[in-house]
Amino acid sequence: MNIQFDEMTTVEKKPEAVVLSRQELLELTRQLDHMGKRFERFMSMQLQQLEIAIDDFDREREAWRRYCDRAEKKTEDRSQIAANLTLDPYLERPDVSSRQKKQSYVPSNDATAPLRMLIHPGKATAMQIGLLLFEISKFNRELKGGGVRFDVSGARIPRKKLKSKNANNGSILSFEAFSYVPLLAYDGTPTQQLQSWDQFKSEILLSSLTDQKLQKEFKKSIDAKRDHESRELAFEATRRAENAISKCDITQERSTSGFFSSKKTKFPASQQLQRVEDVARYLKKECALRIHLALVW
Image (spheres, rainbow, N blue to C red):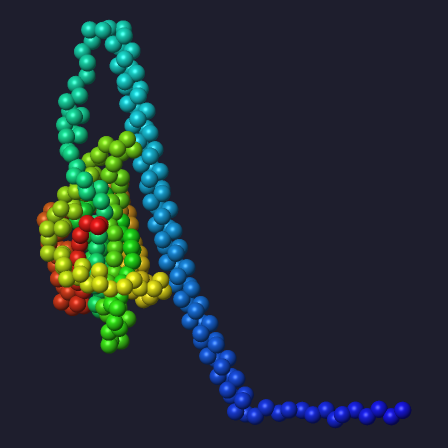
């Protein structure tokens, strides 16, 4: 029985097909590398937001501990006064007029509300926007506040694409500014920082940092996607502002503990507000940056 096998044929690829397949692999590699870089930036921003949230939680926890200590001390004082009155009913009661004077400040309905900031970056970088945010936080400190924490609430872009190579052209960044320290105690009574926060908002809203046209443009625009360059710019600006604020805190702690000279000239709040306006005016002239401050609506 004779079995015949077919001859094995080998198919040779043409050089053009090999070059084409290599180009496809290179293009796929570039796309994967681009996606990897975007994912890395996204994860870094998420980790930064997580660090900020952890810091806020630690501050709230410390504020809660201080509140518990004060409440425990008040309870001990009241129990001691009650025991003394029981032993001697003719004992003079403590004067509470000084405590009432401290709580005489009656806040308005929007006193605890955060401050909203709309920024059209123009050609400004994240470092320049972060500098402006830092100067605003420093102005709050000059009013005996605890500083300002900035959160990115969104970013919007025009409905029609603008003919420009700048990705941030026409985009408007939205921030919300909160006080670093609690403004109300856990029983709802206003703290000393509330009056400073209310004064901070009232003075900065009466400054030249208002642009009603920018607010109208923000309402007419549409929300940007999560991976849009404007959102990355906003998160990077808040990160730089946070770093500058933390470095300022470390410098103040060292100066009070004796590492540096405690003789430091402090500018009045009016001069710091003027500095904020000068920085905004400079960025408007050099980078076409626009800013609008308002209460959260």
